[in-house]
Structure formats: C-alpha cells, structure tokens
Length: 480
Image 1: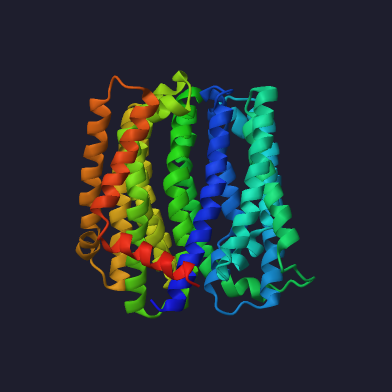
Image 2: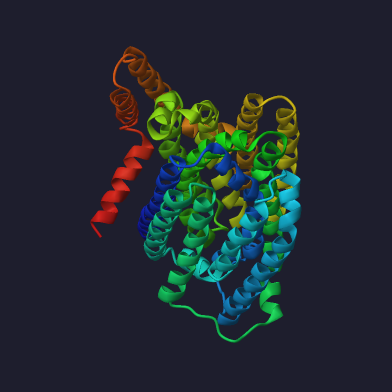
C-alpha cells in the first residue's frame, strides 16, 4: 500500500472503530442495564420482530448505499434520485408492515406484537432519510463525522431506554431505545450533512445502479432471512423465554465481533474500490485486512468463551444462567465471523454481485437445512449446528474470494497460522488461571484470567506482522 492509502486506511479504521465500539458498546451497556429490570421473555418479544425489521432496513437501502460508495463518478442528480427512491421504499415498507402486524402477532400467538411492530417500524422510515448521507461519508472515508453523530444518538437513546425500563419494566424500553436512536441519528445527519437533495428525480439515475443494487439486494435479503431465521423459528417452536436466552448472548457476540469486523470492512471497502482492477494490490491489501480482523477479534471472543460462566455471573442476574451456556458456542461464531464478512467485499468491489447472490443462495440453503434439523431436536443442538455452519461459511466464502484474487485457501491459512498458535496458548493460560483460582473472588478471578490471557497473546504475537503493522501505522498516523 502507498503511504497515503495507509494513512487513510488507519485513520478511517480508527474512527470507524470509535464509532462502532462507542455505538454498540453504549447500546450493549444500556441493554444490560435494561436486562436488570426485564425478564428474558420481554427480550424474546423483540427477537420475534427482528427478522421483519431487518428485511425492511435492507429494502430501504436496496444496495444503493454500497453502489454509491463503489461508483467513481456520482452526479448530484444521482444522489437526489436515489434519496427520493429510498424514501418511497421506506414509506411502502411501513405501510405493508402496518397492515401485516396483526398476522405476525397471530403467527407467534402474542397479541401485543401488533402495536409493538407498528411503533418499532417507524425506525425504518427514519432510516430512509439517511442512506445517501451515510454513503457519501463512507465514500469519502469521513468516519469522524459518523462517529460523533452516532455517539450522541446512542447516548441519548440509551438514556431514553433505561428511563422506560425504570418506569414500565417491560418491552417498551427496548422499542423506545431503538426508535429514538434511529430518529436522533437521522436528525443529526440532516443538521450536519453538507449535502441536501434537490427537487430532481430521474429514472436513468436509478437504472445506472440498478443491476449492481438488485443483485446485492437479493443477496442481502437472503442473508437477512437466514440470519434471523433462528429468531423466527425459536420464537415459533419454543417460548419467548427460550428466545430471550438466545437473543441476548447473540447480541453480545455480534456487538463485539460484528462491531469490530464491520468497523474494519466499512473502511476497507471504499479503499479497495479505488484499486479494484489491480489484482496484486487487491490481494495484498485484502489479506492484510482479513488477517488483521482475525488478529483483533478472535482473542476477545475465545477468551470470553473460556470465561463465559463468570462473565454472565458478573453482568446479568442468575435467571440468565442458560444464556451463558449458549454464549460459549456463539463465541466460536464470533471468532470466525470476519472471514465471510470481509471477504464478500472483495467480490463486490470486483463487480461480482451476481456471484455473491449465487453464493448467498447456496450457503443459506444449507443453513436452513441445518436450522430445521436443530429446531426439531433441542436448543443446544441447534446452536452447535450454527457453529458448524459458520465455520463452513468462512471457508466457503474464502475459497471463492481466493479464486478471484489468486490466493488459495492454503495460502490464506498459512497467513493465519501464527495467530492461531498464539490463541491456543492464550486460551490455555486463561483456563488454567480460572481453574486454579476456582475458590477466589468472582471478579478477581475473571479479570485476572482475561488479563493474563490477553497479555500472553500479545507477548507471543509481539514480533508478528499484525502487531508490528498496528504499531508502525499508528505511529505514522500520530506523526501526521
């Protein structure tokens, strides 16, 4: 990478991490505070709505956000046309969900879902007003502005959510937190954005991005269906309490692994788009990004796997003890999540949205088969099968990406071997400390085990390429 690209990548990644970690961190902290006042069944109600909210968010964006980021030359007419198109989609999505809400409530046999969905879906309409502004800021790698807006929004919405929890002690606290976050963020993007739409709409501007966007939309809809299918089927086949015991540890896992991975790939995507036709440069940069993501995310997830029982005993009440067992499996998913997440971007910048859609259909068909098998057995088997699928998914996507950039699976694995060895030793150290201090204070045992595990990992990887890359490039950034 050139020096300018390195500075842009490091600067953007740092701000992206600040934005995602602060946003998800505060959201997670507020959710854990709210969980002190709500039973798992209330979280289960929100889990039942998740798949419908996810579908609507994807429909509102329709892939145009990433299409804008990827396209080198976007005209003012393009921006305005896409903006109005997104607004229309948001309004349509809300109207459809408003009338479908009673049927969804009947499906789950939870009458209160009707009003919950109709209120929570207002967030989809607010989201439609920010698609273009967000894409413009990502395109210019201006994550500092995104970070400031998101931090203020999540802080205010967290206070609102906790206030509702103290007042009502029910699911409305979670709905209030979600809707207020999207509304405040949309308002602030309009206040601080340098761009505002003109009274211009031209269908050719939509058609310009339609092929890429529709392939991406199809892939995302398939992904949303399968990613949220566990919530749908668990909510239907088991109880709201069972779903709550799954959704909270899953939210913890995605808040950590998903946040870090998203923060990295959100910066790497527009940068890779700049040299999408230079295979050698794309291979070098993308493999460094994937390796870096695994280096940062895996130790956190795998050490939390070792210390899951103590972790949940610290952050939640005893009624969440089953969730701690599920969290151990979900940590494995978080450790490998970055491979499929980031590698998919390589196919997109290479304009392989049609291949992405085919990959999505195949891998998610397998996912549904394993999910149905799990639902027909028990919750623990279900979550174990989710782990198996996620490991397969990481290898499957990496294979097609490697074929596109001429980097075999063996080459990719070879790059990760030092990190994997360091992880194994660090996990052994953390487990040994926890075992030897079994009769010690819970808080001391947890923090000492985590600290020594992370310390071992950093010490063993000190001379590795990823540690040195972080140290040298942060040094470059600080000397600017």
